[in-house]
Image (tube, rainbow, N blue to C red; front, side, top):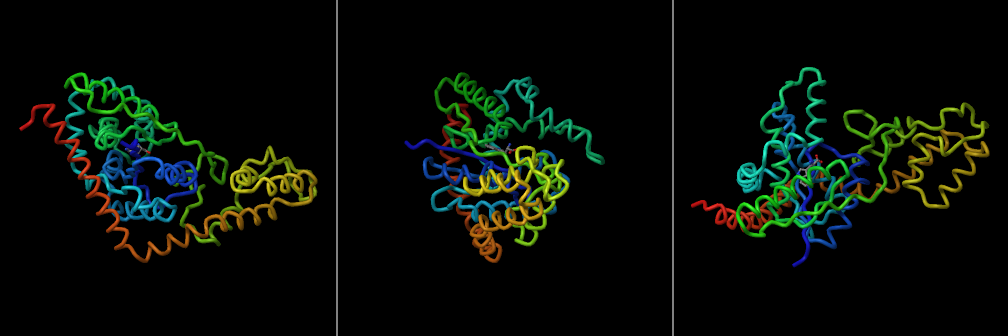
Length: 333
Ligand code: TRP
């Protein structure tokens, strides 16, 4: 049997270039090698935003559109919505029973989230039971398809460790090597920083969206930090100390383009504004086909919904096979 991957993303609305370079691009490659399942994690959104669900449905669609536009192919991969596969919630119950409480308590991501929740003004400072159970729910997402591999960023590796522990424990308790102990596949591509040099993120307002119009992208790029010691165009530049713009060149440019920019900057022949104008044009060129595809799906939302419904049906069929066996193992009626 072909090896199988499962991965998910929270429905945070329109995705940015950090998502594209860090996650989606990898999925697009991996889908040709693995039996692939990608889902929008709408239950996970509830772990922190259970009281702000007005835009949830739209956010799910927006994420799906960005995936489709970026090249996740619904003919090759199964694209689905977590909550449309209710079997995951049932598996979550069984896994919760075999998981010692201190395994979830020591989850580092959970600790960080709790800290953020506490410092956010107006947020309920309590960690809900649901948020506490998030590592178990994520294990259920993965084990529901009995995945062998999970493509994730380095920040998620601790969760995959817990999943492996839970899978091993379940197998031990019910005396059958049923669940795989899934391996992380680490994203190998470059991390892109935000326009201000910090981590790119929606809430920091330093991001460029996949869906941004060309004019918006060009304008945003003009705000990117450059070499702070360089005041005039004729000052000799230091590309390696350029905080954002040159880093973007290194991600998007060809080797020749990068060498050219480096040379002109170091000789004081090209100013930062000019450099960023060119950079904006380059990024717009790279994303033009994706954006065009995006516009198609934006005007064919019913098609997107059909893709999600079909994918969820397919995912459910897989989930039911796994769940039937789990119920037998646990001795449910
Ligand atoms: N926790 C992941 C994130 O915050 C999203 C996620 C939920 C996920 N379930 C998953 C990723 C299962 C991979 C596999 O980004």
